[in-house]
Image (cartoon, helix red, strand yellow):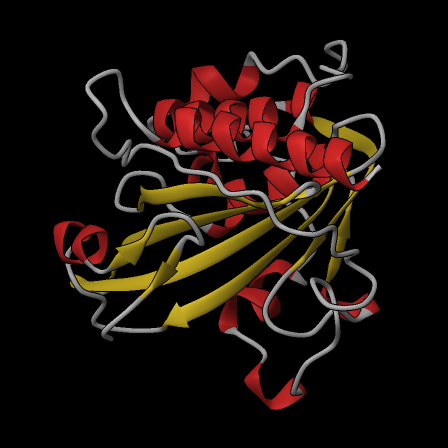
Length: 236
């Protein structure tokens, strides 16, 4: 039994290493992965934290949805979203990480709201800020996308994905830089977003945590300081 388990684990490591490198053997900075023991979200990923650290994002997302015409840059793309599109069930965590990575790069849905409902469970819950409490929750993926749509002005907000990495068999982390203009002033933040998948391979929980709340380094500097296997920053 121990021999079989060791061989199986070695196979996982080899597969992970293959996904983390390109054909020429160099590191794949678009997305890297690494196997970790299973860690369930109830005990750590979505655990409550100090309420005094609740972000401005949490306060803004608590506002009611304003259903009005969307006329900003990606308006046509948002209006064409198929919210009832069949779910992409059965994906493993690596495939889901690829889908999240590619879709964020394509549509910046973390700020545009032009999301990918096929990747998200009907029971999806979004937790804003650093405290997983009912007041900070948004239930339903379409509801979340519309809130994000209202929160950011797409004409001046942008999302630059730094890293998207598998942390353990049911958790994916995305590290990204938010750039936004307020009153003509360029503000920037660094946000870590955690996605947790269910038994069908769909994302059922998402949580944002602001790592740097102002004067964030450039995207190039962040990539230079990113630990790709864990999608964390070093030396800051």
